[in-house]
Amino acid sequence: MVPIRRLLMAGLVLIITGHLIGCSDNGSNQDSSPQSNSLRLQSISTSLSSPVFMTAPPNDSTRLFIVQQGGLIRVFDVVGGSLLTDPFLNVSSLLSTGGERGLLGMAFDPQYAANRQFYIFYTNTAGNVVIARYLRNITDPNLADASSAVILLTVAHPNFSNHNGGMLAFGPDGCLYAGVGDGGSNGVSGADPNNNGQSLSSLLGKLLRLNPDTGGACSNVIINPFVLVGGAQQIWSLGLRNPWRFSFDRTTGDLYIGDVGESAREEIDVAVAPNAGRQANYGWRLMEGTLCFNPTSNCNPGSLTLPVLDYPHLNGACSVTGGYVYRGSVKPDLRGTYFYADFCAGFVKSFRYQNGQPTDQTEWPLLSPPGSFVTSFGEDAVGELYVMTRGGGLFKFIPN
Image (cartoon, rainbow, N blue to C red; front, top):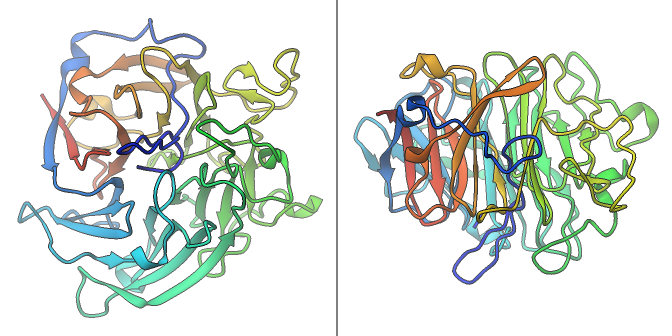
């Protein structure tokens, strides 16, 4: 159902790869304190079709925008408590779909209220990754102007259908960031046969930092690091396998990446502000999490940026779903806590990043959604968190 992880959908294997838990353990140190029962899920909607992302415009607490993999962006009216019938945008005719392909992400411009601009991430009919800018309808705030599309960037994605990435987000610097997978490989497990993750000439297997007006390199405050050494101008960091979901802490600007693993480990990477993640090499395919991958032993991590947290494929875990640092108000004691999940195992866990280490690691049994298969987290305009499932559910974190 969604890219970047193993999307096991109705007989389809959606390979999302990744999970994470404690730096190289199986999560046995997870806290089961009373705090882990202090949050539960509130059902927002169970009638969505393959929801893969949810967001909201800046300063708009009245609506939630939900990305469906098949090509629709739906609007949930928070005040009325209902899903609007007409989609905000329908780009289904532009897509290749199934497995990890489709409409995979969106982001609102920080000045959306004034400039009406938003961005989407999808795989086109040729299977290539496309990042495009659209405008909201000038008279109806619940409709986009489908004729306003401007393609900012197309990333060739030949040979294989998986590992497309899918996340878009604006950084604290006003640049548009995009997570692109390594290009995939045959079957359910691809090992980046072309080593795209380490190639500075390829945009695959990278975190890109884009000028939201042109799709080129963003030079706001600081230039992208690889331009000066002949690399592709949009590359911000490299060595990623399938960064399905990443996020910036809205308070600190720190960057958290959930990078889906191959067959053994899932990982979460953290890069602190300012310039979070600039020129970082997260190691794929030399390493998978904290383990050597290619070569299988005696690899030299050198100057690689190793994950803050990784976890093994045990107890059903198969693919990490990166989340958000909580900055809402209904549970102020949890501010600064990062939440993540596993697509297959269905768990929701958290940690606090302090002094370079994951602390206060906790599993939240009441946040594991019905049916599991956690495709994504969502964050609304006021910093409250949500979780989505392949089966069509959208749920909000609320105090228990």
